Image 1 (tube, rainbow, N blue to C red):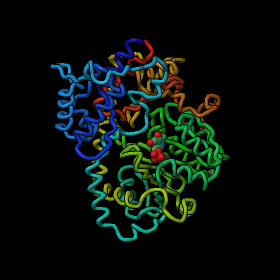
Image 2: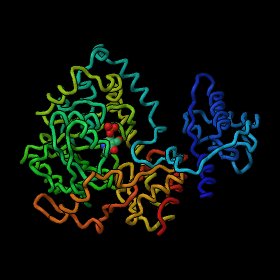
Image 3: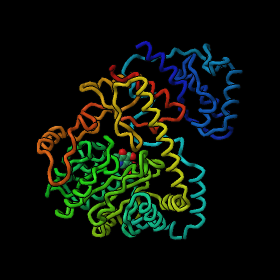
Image 4: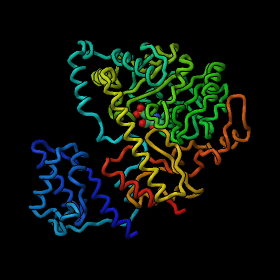
Length: 492
Ligand SMILES: Cc1ncc(COP(=O)(O)O)c(C=O)c1O
């Protein structure tokens, strides 16, 4: 335990989130923030600061600005620089307020490292290219762009997305079938209102999505997931819709088997049900060409949801729905008379970003970066925890580490003690899923697609595992986050 506290000082040395409030000279603002951090005890005496290059990259500052700030704080006595060991908080940094770091699980609430899956590293948002697109888009925008918005969303973006999604995801979409929304969550809410319940959903999925559907009166029933994705042979006539992540099952990580893709479309045709395809990270595939969208098989029975949340930033709140013709009018009607969910100027900016090729460039850049991160994760595990199997690594921004039965909770707790936030597979499991899985598994193969090999043999995570998001930490913080992860894993 003592070790973990010592380590936390080291960890802080590498990842230093700072609030740079105030305007004016950036060096002075940074110095004030660092002094505050020392004064408040957040940076304890002896804590190693990040190399000025990485702090500059993380904070979006010039390297000289950070180097100068460090040098001045050394001169003032707040920091100490020693050859070979970088810059540290001085042992007698003023004032000497005792630093209380209670040994309680409170540390879990303020983790030093973040490997919770979810979002890309915010420091790599393409600010310059986005600004260039915003400038061009605003200069070219017709006057009506500044009036009340059409709930379909800006036509410029719907046209740009129709081309992009056809080219990259195999989506069949005329711009008239695309309705813009503020993200997949918004799309689900609209579909819940239009389609009604009940729905089936993969037994592993985002709890937030299930809760959101429930809050709109749509209950979900879990579908067992095995090595070939969701067991769509569990669908019935009662299900009004099924929520799937076919390109990259969330979060277990495999693609939906081709026979099951065909089978789910057959189910929709036979019953009038709707396939809701959450295409949340379809562009990020590392081992081969992306798996095309199921929507391309039958645009009249599949509603595809996508957004820029994984590719650019979840804060933009721009998403899209590619809808069967019969649903367009009702979805737009539910959305309201005016666009009130995402800004028209942001939509125009994204349209330019896509049309100019900047979106493709950013996705390519991010794909390389995520692949590198994934390789680092796999290498660290091979070195430090060869007994832990890592799955779901062919795509996306996260992987699953399979753990021995009964060890997931303790691994999550151990991670918290290492200052690391990470989630277990159980956090994603549909309530009641265990029972559903056994019942469907017992039925064996059916005419609705192959059942897939037994879970244990096929590499589907068993019931114990960690979902590791490798995209979020800043570049300089990632190696330390991996170290903390390895320390938290159960011994082999
Ligand atoms: C499974 C899944 N679907 C969709 C999304 C995107 O949601 P939204 O577009 O509402 O930000 C996420 C998170 O980014 C996700 O994890």
